[in-house]
View: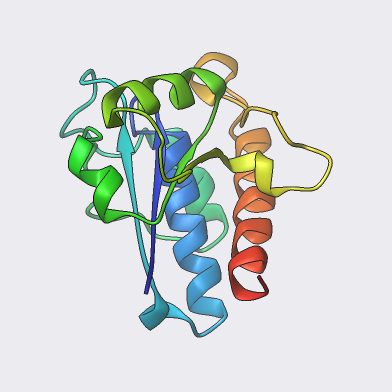
Length: 153
């Protein structure tokens, strides 16, 4: 089983969008039993809150439910448990490494590092831009490439 944890600042926009997009792609590929997928925050600001309503609406536009999601914070134990910890931007990566005590097993990466030609690029942050469409496309591109790399190593 491959365990993937998507991480952003608050766990109410980008990382849960990536989580539920990835779950949808895995379901469409009939690989549900081969994956465990979740998301978390580097901050405590939104702990316990559901997905931000515009992010929820964007997922719903594509037939993806995110019911039951509540923001939680990344823990050091997550590093040991998950095979991949995927951040949305360089600040997430820095905080993830700090919170996890480094990245000795090379499990931490940016989501768009998995998309050829987009390495080092951040997922658009809709909290500041309001552009959930751009975030949708970044997450879809990243998750599609990530699933392809796992399915075809």
